[in-house]
Length: 103
Ligand SMILES: [Zn+2]
Ligand SMILES: [Zn+2]
Image (cartoon, rainbow, N blue to C red; front, side, top):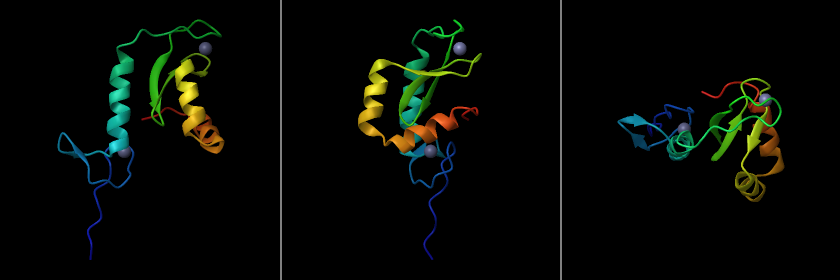
């Protein structure tokens, strides 16, 4: 019997990749890198209510999420990448996922 690969510590996908001795899949490693980079950037005010928005990473994209109205905003460049790289269905699923906190 083949052994299953361990589950990613972050998203639960099976992976053989390791980071700091914990199983973390390549995608999560990438996302965490993006998040570290994004956290060094200045927080932007929500265009709707002016609240400072939190940086999050979803599907390899850095997004700004407003804690007040829960609006999700992308940088212009992020949106272009998203159009190129993702199916519309994925974007819709992602938008729905935005309504609950990402852990
Ligand atoms: Zn993962
Ligand atoms: Zn807002």
